[in-house]
Length: 265
Image (cartoon, rainbow, N blue to C red):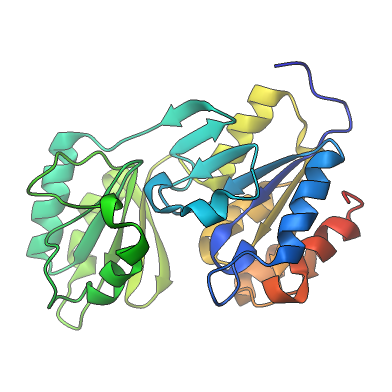
């Protein structure tokens, strides 16, 4: 690709709670702002904890320049896949055995599929499985398909013993605990921030020309690492504390306001 202008900025957007409103849609003000951002010569990226397999088409509709998915373990720039870090098959089997023995409910998230123990209803994951009504081809039974996963997530019930599994997990992963009963398990050495750094180095853009929008605990490293971290109004308290600017909620034109605040649109 041609060298970027010295004024080009890289802008990274979390999806859930940042781009998407409570109805799961990107407000028209955000779509227009992203298009204007690009027209002004800047690059727009998704930077999400979601695996690529669960990014619905309507989220991609604004036309992003690239995607950092699964907390930095999968990266695409335009039409080129640049990074795809997957968990080895031996480790997948050990994870299934160890976490099952501890009563921890997990699902593996990859570029093509999300893998679960069973596609049948009647489990703790029923609410999670309903999320895939518009992505039926993304869901797979890990007994029927070899697992190609970038990361995994977990859910606990009152009998789960996650602490018993921590010594094994922490050899290979770090945990992000979103709530008392759920969280993400990410390969060591990867995060939304490492995804940003990879693209900065690849494109030759300095840190001071990077911007990030987020709202959740898995956005803290991204917001802290960016030259300018922007928290949504409904962000968790820790997210607000480390951000450089707080903007409105998605339906309050938060994306447009944040971009205007920094003179990007």
